[in-house]
Length: 571
Image (cartoon, rainbow, N blue to C red; front, side):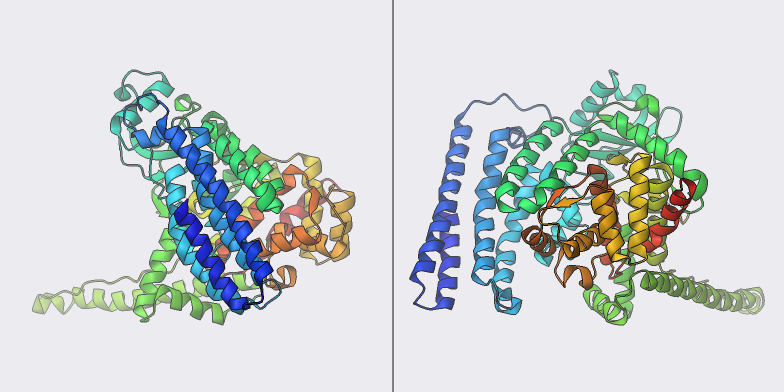
């Protein structure tokens, strides 16, 4: 508590010096603000001390006492507020102090806070895990959502979360208990105790069934559902006074997240989307099958896909490409950004064409060089006994083409079938060895009934054709959108932001958080159908994939074709 108070006081003194000696009233307000924060922190400290003194049962086999200790709901909330309130107070004071002044004047203070607190935030996320790790995963989907100091560890959370089932005995006992077997070898020839991926609610392990099939086994952490629910309640309470614009979306996210804890439902969703999508898209994508007889609420067994994570594959290739040019990855990204325009879909199509041409050029060069080597090896090498080695180039990943396919596949899910994956973040997308895109993790699947699909399809067509007035009229009269002031200009920006684009004409140059804060201050949303929240989330996450590699996307041009087909079919 004293350390946090000292931290707060030091920040307040820096700001006070900036404004001069005639700001006594302001300094009193600052002290009052931090006094309040320190009081709450002290309350959190008291809770920690009290809970530390209570008796606790012995931890389960394979877990540490600290892991068991942090399953206590009150304690988890106390830890969150202990760290969150002082950090939040310092950021809000900085924002208030520099309100109305150019960002450059406050930049060094914000950078100071980012550097000061990023390690603490990472520590808390890894300590509490659960919903906080899920939040880090969501934050990592866009490079412009959070400061770069926080972004690095958030990106690691996409598929490098520390597992809670590291102990072999605990892993096997959890699987056996869920499947109703006494020994793991009744079903599996082997199961790798080191996970191939770990997320916020469970880990995935490679295994081999008795019939020889290689599978991926998804295992849920013990008691994770209880912890998640407690964390969501804590975060919603905090946002109700700190970030009220987030509350409606948190409530829908809560409803959707809680479906992730039933792996039987996830298996059914995966199977349903697989049957809907693969007949038309098998050439470009693949979705694993599930072994239904081995799926329970806490365990899901599915086909193992040979491939690599999309994001890691692209970053690894870009790093090698940058090194060949004598650049760092950051310098290469800046170079590419300066060469691109903010032209949305046209830019993506252009990048796809350039990558295709570059690949074909490399293939022709390789064929030419290796053809000469082959000729040499068949002739002169017979004389001198020396043969030449064949050399093949590393062909660039056509990221723009991958994004195009993902855009069209999700449009197909939404408008053709009305059953779509609401969580297409980078950790759920693979590049398979056969060149196709692998889609995994269907814990967040939403079903949209036909009447709502038709309304959403019309909205997409209006957005794609830039009919601003029609967008607003349709959303307010047909889709039930209501805001406090019914500001038509703001309503259009809200709809475009969630369902189409986040270019400067919509955001005014603001990042996501700044835009949401501004929108909530000018004209907050009061009514929005849950279905439209989740489909908007898909649009934001797909754009985020492009933003991660400096590809600015518009969604509506890619979704318009499927939307129009649906409207024509039911006209």
